[in-house]
Length: 77
Image: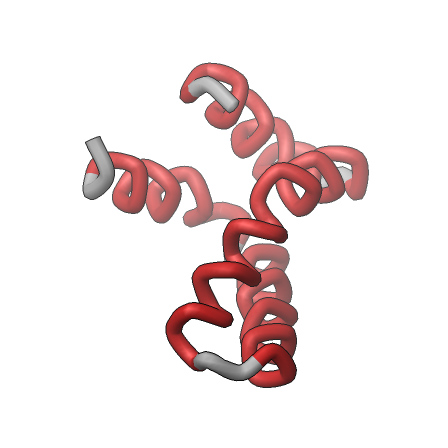
């Protein structure tokens, strides 16, 4: 996903809080997040639990999501 498309999805999610935009974000990033958490924990069940917590926080903190994604993206040139 290119940066402009990601920014557009995040902005739409922030403004609308729409399930449609959340589903797009989830679809795009859920597997990568799960793989990363599995790498960190070396435990599938723990990784799944942590992944759920990540997505709950995304929903609760959608207004600061753009900043968070920008921070993560800038750390990975």
